[in-house]
Length: 236
Image (tube, rainbow, N blue to C red):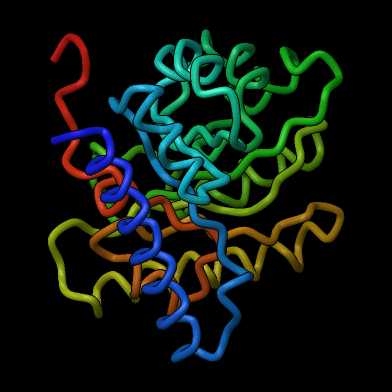
């Protein structure tokens, strides 16, 4: 496949995803402008990601801090989101690389981010595990209130909202139920913590995008539908 073919393919994929978002939003009675498309580019090289920027992407997502550290300078643009798990020993670097960290899942991690941000703004989402899947990470529903309160009272982090990963391989109704729960949790936190800008709902990926949008997603994390099938990560 030539570079021109790859360029055209990514551009077409971006257009298709944006059209899909617009269609679902119209059916749900909401504006497509209320949704941020984060293109998840883990394992794809900088040259491929630059093609995405040329196709109109503005927000890019990475799962691993170490991969982002190398890739972000090579790409040279975009707003970057950390959408994967964050280890505390990578917290300082994460605050330097990412505009939004989606995966805060413990009070210890929140406190660490607050210490290492060096007085600079740090926007975060709390990842909530609503499926019980051990592989997904995130704080439990029961632990959410304690974590959100700690962020509000004990740190200078800006709590922008919540993130979740939907149930894998299920019907749309199960996905909608999960995403609806996250919206309800977000709405309750907005009442309890009025000083925090709790707006965002980061939910929905390639396979469950429609269900997430119907339930109010403000950020969707799409990789495969834009960049294609991923290559194995280094070392796997």
